[in-house]
Amino acid sequence: MTGIEKTVKRQQQYFATGKTKSYAFRMHALLLLEKTIRSHEKELNEALKKDLNKAQMESYMTETGMVLSEINYLKKHLFGWMQNKTVRTPLAQFPSHSFEMKEPYGVVLVMAPWNYPFMLLMEPLAGALAAGNCAVVKPSAYSPHVSAVIKKMLEEVFPAGLVAVVEGGRAENKELLDQKFDYIFFTGGVKVGQLVLEKAARHLTPVTLELGGKSPCIVDQTANIRLAARRIVFGKYLNAGQTCVAPDYILVHESVKDELVKYLKFYISVMLGEKPLQNEEYPKIINEKHYDRLMGLLEGEHAVVGGKGSRRQLKIEPTVLTEVTEASPVMQEEIFGPILPVLTWQYLSNAEKFINSRPKPLALYLFTRNRKTRKQLLKNISFGGGCVNDTIIHLATSRMGFGGVGGSGMGSYHGKYSFDTFSHTKSIVKKSCLLDLPMRYHPYTFWKELLVRMFMS
Image 1 (cartoon, rainbow, N blue to C red):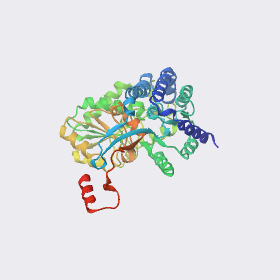
Image 2 (image 1 turned 180 degrees about the horizontal axis):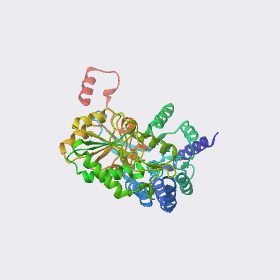
Image 3 (image 1 turned 45 degrees about the horizontal axis):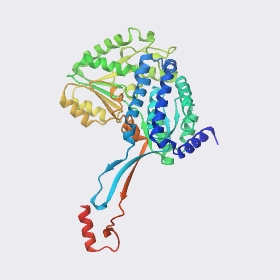
Image 4 (image 1 turned 90 degrees about the vertical axis):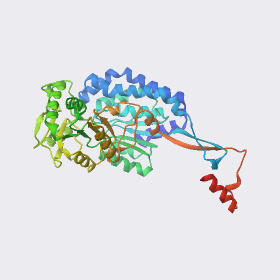
């Protein structure tokens, strides 16, 4: 038996004890998680700096702070979520009481990516613990410093049977996916997501996939262009564009394109400086492989801002491309970097058709002050979630679910949605023994059928 097989077996045995199902146990687990995050925050900041060159404020705003906020929300609402929910009973089942109850799946696998290596592992873990599960977590090998801190902090407070950390690369991922889990939660790219789904199908394991895609940003002629540019620059170049919900490309009305590009240039300079590659707080590309891929996308393109990179630093300037067509290489895949193509449209229907002709995106951003435009696009375009007159902030709340649709993912989490994702809902009818109506029993007669039709209509 391999080490990973032993880990999963140990978790299954721990879950079988029933310890994780009580409210007291779950609350204690959340408190321990919160405590260990706070006590290791400095180490986490240092690790995020080493792996992605994230500034301390950005690390808190997009990683540790979001996780602590999520844990706090889970603690406040956990007791209520765990209670049985009474539902109306059909007259045909009288006299009885119908209710739904939540139960943990058992042993769950959480696989995290490298771009937000702490937040995208800890938020699902918090939901899994709140729902009463045991968890095996797999950090990304591309963010080794954060992975090491995660392993250290979780092993300090949790028994291995409750939370186990498995480090490593593709070999470990493959072996983990060969195991029988009760639920798999995966965040990452589409290709690996397909593999996860294929592996899970062998064991009929339910799965949540948080993937990505080319998330469009639509700007119409009624938008506050200056404010739109400011918010687009923030959302696009956060973490050097290595964000699954970053605006992937802009579709702007042709009449305001020049004004938008002017303000994009202005706010890139204001936020990141005239020489972003020398900005110590500007994040880097995760590794040489992704750096080379991104620089390859820039070949032959016209950059009105940026366009240069430093392989030694693994940094690429915030870049804006304007002479882009639908056939351009940069429009064929999710960019996942600080490159922003700008395309134009004359009629809103053209922008709508352009987006709907492509795989469903994880996010959509719309900048407009036209109510009719807002209603039309939100109704006619399918996407995971998004914002009107802003970018990215829709995922920074525990009160709404976050997830994709179609090729951008399946399932959702955050807050109550995390609790529900990691819980199975059992539907129960508690029938009274005082009265037993004979209509359903053989022999069936005309009068019984008539009564059944009356009760069930």
